[in-house]
Structure formats: C-alpha cells, structure tokens
Length: 247
Ligand code: PEP
Image 1 (cartoon, protein in one colour):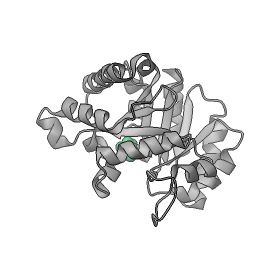
Image 2: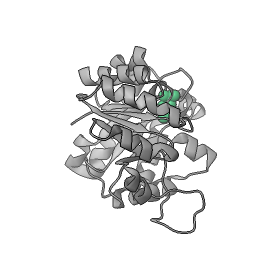
Image 3: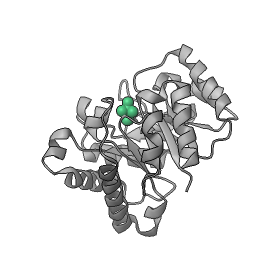
Image 4: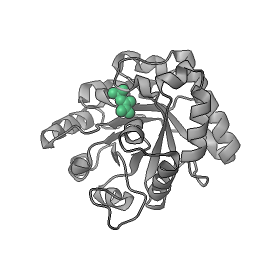
C-alpha cells in the first residue's frame, strides 16, 4: 500500500499561494508516499497546471451528490475531475457542522465521487463531548456505517479519522487512542468489505505537524495523514511528507 499525505487548504489560498506548490514539488519530486493537496475549488485547475508532471495529486474539499443541475454555488465531482482532481474530501467535520451534512448526505457525496472516478476521503470523528462520554467508538462506527459506500474497494476509498476537538487546536489524542480507533476502523471495514479492507488507507487528521508526524505514522493502521494548517506551507507539509516516506 502506498501511504498518503493529504493537505486540506480549507478556505485559504489565492493565486500567490501557487509558489508553495512549486516549492513543494521541487523539494519532493518523487516522494515515497502519495502526496495530495486539496486547495479551494478556485485553485484546482491552476494547481493542476503547476503540478503537471510532478508527483503531486490534486483533490477537492467537497462535492455535490448530483452530477450536474440547479445547485447554485456547488461543485460536482465531475467538475473537480475535469479540473484535474483525483480525490475529494467528503464529510469533513466543518462541512458536517457548518452545513448540517448527515451521514446520508456524506454517503451520497462519496458515491457520486466514486461514480465520477474520484477517490473520496471520507472523514469521521467524535466531538470532545462524545469522547468524554466514552462514545468515541460508537460514533465512529455509526459514521462509518452511514457514510461509506458498500461497493468501495482499496482503490476507491480513503478514510480519515479526525477527532473534531483536535482539528486546528494543537491538541491530539494520545498515540494509544489513535491506534485504538484505527484498529477499530480496520476491523469494521474488514467486516464490511472483506479482503479489500486491508488496502484501504486510514489517515489520521487533527493537528498533525512536523514535530508529531513520525510518532503518529509509526502506529499500526495509520496509513497517512489529512493535514490542515501545516499543509499551507511547503516546508511544513514537505517535512510531513518526508516523515511518512520514512515510516
Ligand atoms: C483538517 O482540517 O482536516 C485538519 C486536520 O486540520 P489541522 O491539521 O489544522 O488540525
């Protein structure tokens, strides 16, 4: 399995930020892991042009569940693919919170992505209240059941475990807690997808940075990271790519 370092730029990045893409690709021309940036939709085509011929893959941050139609302001999976994307994040906690996305909505988006030939990165994660109540595995299990298409294979699905309280806060679960959730995810996926589950990449996300990346990547069933803040600067994201390549 090739591991995956995925950067989520969220609602950050104007044309000037393309210099970070150039620097990242120069510093990591042939990384030993897959390297992905999900810029805002406005930059996907430009980043694809800059990244052409390099080892950098492109992704969207969300897609609509419909292939086209009267959905003002939305972007379809086919549009992202047309602009040069090969992945799309779905069900990020900021979408679940800001836009009320349910598991059913996330499932529809993941299915639309797969139908369009994009690999969905399906995000799951508990809130702090849920963790404190001892509900983490119940929440993750429910989200996994409700958000992941049944027909997924190792090549058409990536899962990102992102505790909501760890996103952008500088806080992370303990290594043991991360390992426990990832082992649970692998076990649940195996029950669902059979042997394909062994090849589905399970990313950890939530305040990953150069200083903690190596210890997280050393954990079993951690096959990469979904990185927010630290993906905006080529030097920081490059250090995470290097840590994953060495893991
Ligand atoms: C994210 O947005 O998916 C994320 C993990 O953010 P950060 O790395 O900034 O915590």
